[in-house]
Figure 1 (tube, rainbow over the protein chains, first blue to last red):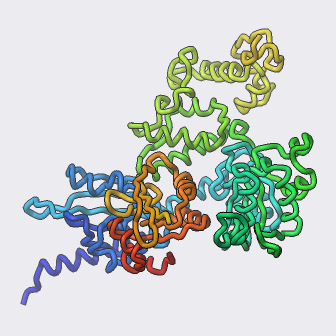
Figure 2 (cartoon, helix red, strand yellow; figure 1 turned 60 degrees about the horizontal axis):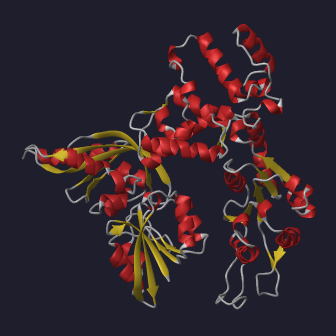
Figure 3 (cartoon, rainbow over the protein chains, first blue to last red; figure 1 turned 90 degrees about the vertical axis):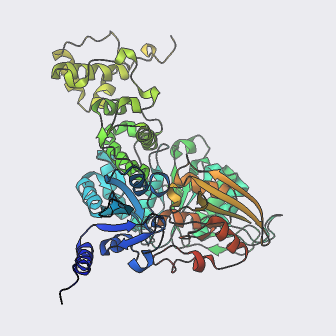
Length: 462
Length: 116
């Protein structure tokens, strides 16, 4: 008897589907999963028998399911979508970067019976990218700045040591990220890292938040509550904005740091804590000590290992890499496919001073991605306050001869730094003597003042 | 007791990290006393976690959620039932009735091991 060709075809289709590296699933008109291949099981961590018959968004759990489901769009418009970068949350709660392609499923008669989605796991690509960029990144901190590289070099030893670490840096420099890396590299990584913003709470609240309380300690304390130190037991506690705590609380904190013991509010018994302390501040604690605003003994207790994170304006060489990193990150979050940034837009970003540091740059990129309708971020996608004024507008950078371009860059840096040659040279990443040589060579006329003299500053009223 | 559920139309959102709305329900005894839907649209995940804390949420029921965010919510002493799916009202009623929502409404995958 001849074998049934349809049955054979189905059998081979299944073998093919289960042997390809891409995840494939199909849905019917009600969005229920009808096919789920082996690679789909591997990438999502969800067994086929549990996926079949389920609504696709409960299985696939991607960042675009709710707002711009690619399969829904294809089913509505008939247009396939290819290589869209998104992420999914797998069965163990991990974020998996993937690229997806979708198409409609039609019978031989053209009747629509559902849709198909093919997806590729980009975890390896992501890892490789990180390895390539590894020369200037540490965990999730990206920098090729020399000072930052020196910090990267000692981070593993700092993590291993178990000592108190003081992280100093302006707001938005990533102090919490450093604390996270130190915790993750330490022997305490299996336990929690608990962060407390000391500056945001008044003394009494901070005390109950850190040390916890016993039932009856105050009117609303109906039952015992564990403090953050107890929550971090075995792990690490990050005391953020430590420079903002009151002198009265500094005494309590000093006692805890000295003995690693504390009493929850309303308790008479001391509790011994096994936690590592990381303190972070955006203030210069040494200066606070000198002004009498921070206890010297507490300062010495926490100033054992100090990391000072340079502000972004002092490591402008990192801006292009950070921009690239944030474009990739927010592409995944927003489900966009922006491929890069136009040179004019990057030029604007390179010149900004970033009082909000890396956080500000990330916000700028996130906003630009939301507004961008093209493949590349353009100057008009950047906030208005960053846009060059009409006086600054010149010919497009690409059309200028090299010398003219050089002249313009030097002039901009000089103006930007109020004609201070040293600061302009630092901004351009060249030596001061090289700048003097270039000024002479290119015939740049300087005003008869230097940015070092205070009276000439355009920011000071005359 | 305040219960928060990220919602997408009438169902539990498949991904908390990117969801746009959250249902805040107040339960007294075993009865639902108040319900309010709030927008999360412009909030980052960290702001979302802070909001839960600020609102005094004691129980959080959600669908898919990335592990660090889940850990962060739990570190704030919020009882969390993650990887739950289905109609939000039905799940909320089951919770009010004291039913085991993890057993009844778990998302597909090996998530029944996930402790609430």
